[in-house]
Image (cartoon, rainbow, N blue to C red; front, side, top):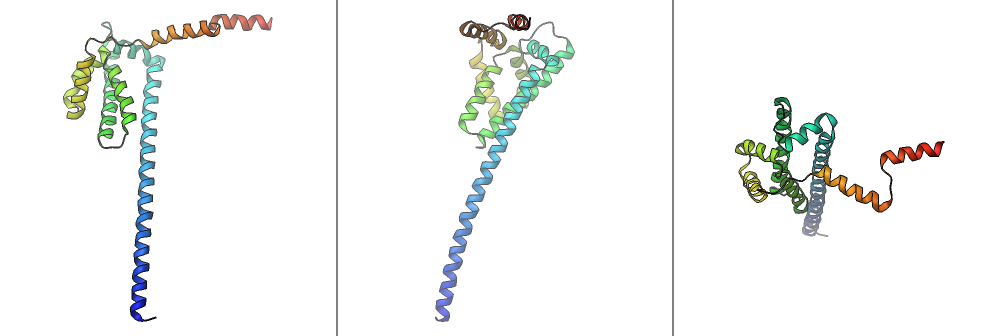
Length: 192
């Protein structure tokens, strides 16, 4: 083997090593991107859970209900608490929108989020707060939310609690389940 053959063989080995390194790097980059997306989705789900738990908290639930329906008899402290909650909620939607624009959130997840934004902006309390907040919003998000506000104009805000109660009553009837009071009485009669 001549010196020239050794040189060419080393060049082939170096090229193969370079290709192998590039493939490995591409796989690592792809895995890192997947991990980043998974972490973002987990954080997003945690934020949704935190908001849901906050709304369900008895110490805040009444404030939230009065705020979303813009109860005219809300006191100033309750209105202040709702306004800060609404600010955080709108900021979260804006961050999800910007993540979607940057390709960090997929279309399917964004479409779900957009549906929740539409529902949120059907409530008069959120609509009123959005009108105060919109000046500081990202221009693209503001355009989207303005469009949603325009399309939701005149839509009746959902009453999830009453809708759930009605559906639960239908399910109780369909399954023959007892109400909680009847179930307690029934359990007591079984122990006697």
